Length: 322
Image (cartoon, rainbow, N blue to C red):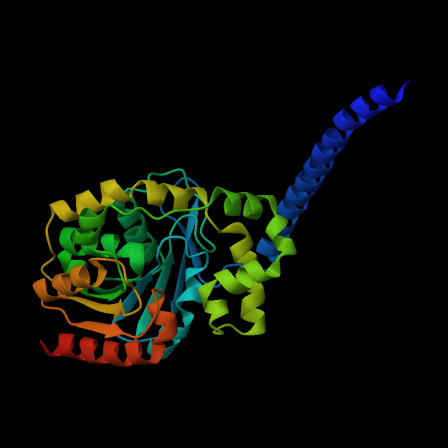
């Protein structure tokens, strides 16, 4: 075989070997990832109650803490892998006086991934059913973060007897989406790295991207558990579908107008998006709610938990006095 033919076959073989090597690494990583996911589910079971809201075998997780006459329902923003740990620093400051419930939507935390629609109508009914099956009774005070502001507003419009107030955590209102049409974006690359298990070789990804961890709110043991949730609940199918349904959901909520209950809102002072602050302030004013602009990021409850808890007590006391 002459040198030219050797060189030719070398050019063909090297890329082929590289592709085979990459395929071997990715497939091996995926198989090991799935094994670890099942192992982690056994080692770290859900701390709350798992309930079947659609009689299809898929369960939602509801975490409860504290005692009191008022029930505060925490509803996470889009893409938050573990709402239980995300809200922890805030609800721990409130559970001494109130009962708190964290509802993890389908595809989040310990909840299963579902094939049911992610329309605001379906998601709301799942949330209401999950609370009922886990032993909670309305009326509630809703604490929506970000995207779940739409669900909270829809809840107050459809079932006003179930909602005493909304206390938004830099939460979305339909007017903002109507003005901007801005859709949240996910990364296919990140999704691939998570689903293949390759991200397990990069612990800093969790450390830097799960906000409660990045801000130092988790103990070592809590971080260990939250990390396992992160590895299976980043950019899930249901999260992508929630993003895709945003135009429909915003329109649906807007069609019913503003609820006849106060919409209080803690607003991120660091959010420089056009119309964001103005939309939230206008919504609070229109419903007789209060607004607070805080020197904090979008995950406002992680930056200003103490202040939000203090103001929440004032808001709830005023509700009881009305």
